[in-house]
Image (cartoon, rainbow, N blue to C red; front, side, top):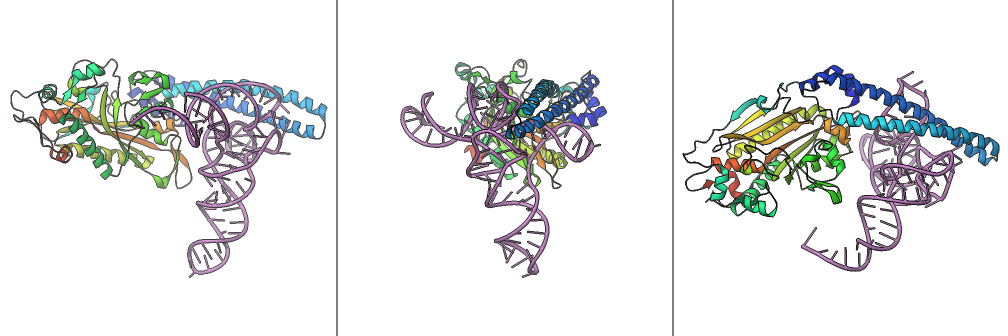
Length: 424
RNA sequence: AGAGAGUUGGCAGAGUGGUCGAAUGCGGUAGUCUUGAAAACUAUUGUACCGCGAGGUACCGGGGGUUCGAAUCCCUCACUCUCUGCCA
């Protein structure tokens, strides 16, 4: 959520930022917000004045009663009642405007960073660079959905029977590969200075609002009506919400956390071509890294996070490329986002395995997450996060790229976790 | 899940209708003293919004109500603790 003060002080920049996201009536929206804010301030001032009068009378009444001046007290009561009534009406007005303003603000996306290229869809994301060699696969090489059947390591049919489409069973070496990847990712994150966290995988409504899943994206999350809890779509939500409402000291920063969780996504309406096998699931595992940073450090932290994830892919021996997301593909909350995609040799496709985003103070403003700097001034922090990494597509690429006649070769770095070097 | 007791400032803990944003203690910060530190002493020490400012307003778990006036009374929700039950 953008700060009203920011909108007011950087009006032109905000309008242009929204236009970059193809919001047509950006100017109108900004004007409307500033008008509402002025209205809110005026109403609040009026209400506060009325309350101040009422409070004053109340104190007088107290003293009059004590000294036995009943008649005077009765007079003051009448005046207090009047002011109180007035304040009540104004209060209702303030609340109404505040709610409306808040609601408007919730629906305004973050302002893209200047380096974000203009573009309507993922097709216009900018490929920054490509690293690693695409595998030379023999004729007759198979996509991963065939390989998992051949080696009986993941069972979609069983998932259909027990849960539904998109909830596979991992079996034997498949399950072990999952465990190995999780351990590898977490160990690397801890080595990079992240605090390992095992968060809850359900969240309440307030947390959903804090990181921006609510309102608007409730349709993407599984919801348990009886307890009003949402299944998390990513560990970002519980981990970032650890600090919701907090006021941190400058010397405790940055906060770096990493956590492994299953992630649940309804993916309503997003099934179509290219979603076979592990490419898109309702439940998948992911290790997420989250950083809470001072504004001055967030850009550097962002770059370090990208490098961390690239290092993971290099250690796994997967060819990857780095994308700078264009304005049309940038998520609502982010101001700058890099995607990392791995090349999956048999599908001959790039698969997104990580999104590393800087949210600036957009989430922090929702979360009311601030810090007190060394000059004792409080200000909003910056939040960042990235997948490090999402498992299914990494596994898909490993299966496809490492297939041989004898079986699938397990990347060296995983072998100490798997205890085997080939899936056959 | 049943019965009971709670939820007050960074922490502990007083306050059961009137100048309470809230005693007191601890902690924090600054200063005095000291070669330095400790101790002691003194002062200071919540957050947010409105206002150029003086200042005003709100917040004692959340929401609502009673009253001229609520931390204090009522309703409601959430959470915590104790006992019983159940359970990994």
